[in-house]
Image (cartoon, rainbow, N blue to C red; front, side, top):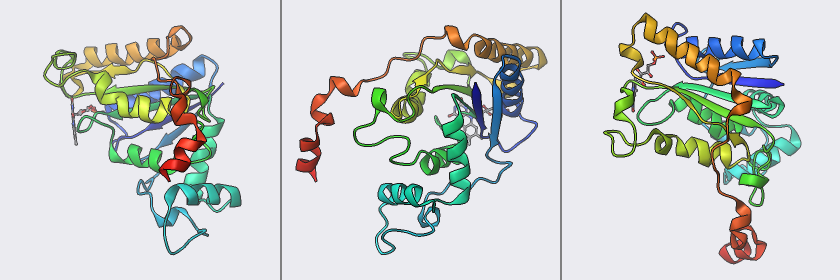
Length: 238
Ligand SMILES: Cc1cc2nc3c(=O)[nH]c(=O)nc-3n(C[C@H](O)[C@H](O)[C@H](O)COP(=O)(O)O)c2cc1C
């Protein structure tokens, strides 16, 4: 019953901000407790680096995954990351709201993922996909585009939006075990008039009210790749 809405847009009066507001209101109406991380408003630092680790295990040679595990175990993870990780772990539903920038998410959101989805807590070598540590949670993406709907699809000018979202859907959300619900895409936003915007806001509200009826996107299963789940494989590779 806890939802976390993460929004990545620099303008509080943007359509993306309006979509995030609509999501918060709708989810609250549906009985969710809603937390919000407005990454620009928070001035969230998206750059993963040494600064994430106040008391590194090895100050000489940075190994990010190992330091993430060490920092979590010792409570020395940077405070801004720890706070976001807490919100993520408390959430049963993660909503990511962003404009499509260069076929992907804005850098601040990529950086939020880089820093917050820490090794050992959200995934491990043996805990990915159906065994991922965030299993039991659901995730849904709300994305806006400048291009019209007709520009997306198999064989269309920009290709299938599912392919553009795959690094996020499969590589982050599915990888860590979350059930990834179908995204909501608002197209042609800079060119939409008031009526079209109202209709797109409404579509997002309906999408969220109907969450329980949505079938999660198909994801790979680690158990279908037993050779990769085998410790001997990783020892051999090391
Ligand atoms: C840096 C940047 C990159 C963009 N890249 C894309 C893109 O790859 N595909 C697309 O359809 N629109 C692209 N756009 C347009 C935005 O997606 C569009 O302006 C936004 O979704 C509108 O929502 P907003 O009014 O809340 O900003 C881009 C815009 C910017 C500023």
